[in-house]
Image 1 (cartoon, rainbow, N blue to C red):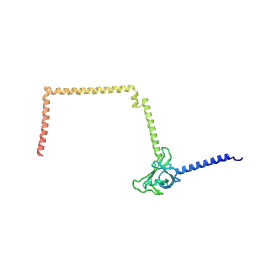
Image 2: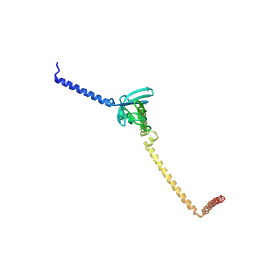
Image 3: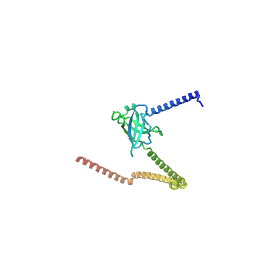
Image 4: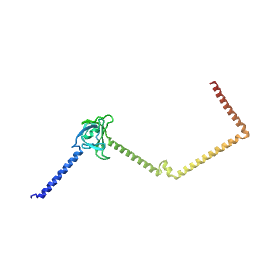
Length: 250
C-alpha cells in the first residue's frame, strides 16, 4: 500500500511537533536543573538527610536556585550532600553560610534551604567549598512522642470514665454521698446544727461582754477593778522610770 502525499505531510507534521515537544521538555527540565547555565558546587555534612533525594531543589531566599547533585554516605554518622547552584547566586553566599533540610509545604518534597551568612565574614564561597549544615529535626521521634502522649491521654480518659461510672452507680464515698438522699439529708442537718451552735457561741460571747461591763460598774466589784487598774498603772510607771534611768546613764 503506497503512502499518499497527504499522509506523508501528516506524518512529517506529527514528527515535527513531537520533536518540538521533546526539545521544549528537555529545555524546561534542563532549565529547572540548571543544565544550561553556569553553576558551582557546594557540599555539607549531615547526620540524617531525612528523606532528601538527588534532584530535589535548593532554595535560597524562597527561590529555587539549584538542585541536589549527589548524596554520599561517608560513615555511619555522616552523609555528604553536594549541591549544584546557579553561578549568579555565588555573590550572595558567604563563607559562613549554612544549609539545612526542609520541606516544600507541610507534606511536600524535601529540599535544601541555603542561608547566606555574612555575619562573621564578607568572603564569598568558592566552587567546591564545604559549608556548615544544620541537622534536620527527627520527625519520627516527634511522632513517637505525640503517639505516647495520645496513648496516655486515652488511658486517662478511660480511667476518668470508670470513676464517673462508679460515682453514678453510688460506689465509693463520693458516689454514696451524691446518690444517697439519706446521707445528703444527714449532712444538711449536721451543717444546720453547726450553724446554730456558732450562732449560740456568738450570742454567749456577747452576753459575757455585757456582764463584764456591768460588773465593772457594780459597787461591790468596783474596788477590785480599781485595784487592778492601780496595779497596772504602777507597773507602767515602773517600766517608764527604768527606761528614763537607762537613758540618763547613756
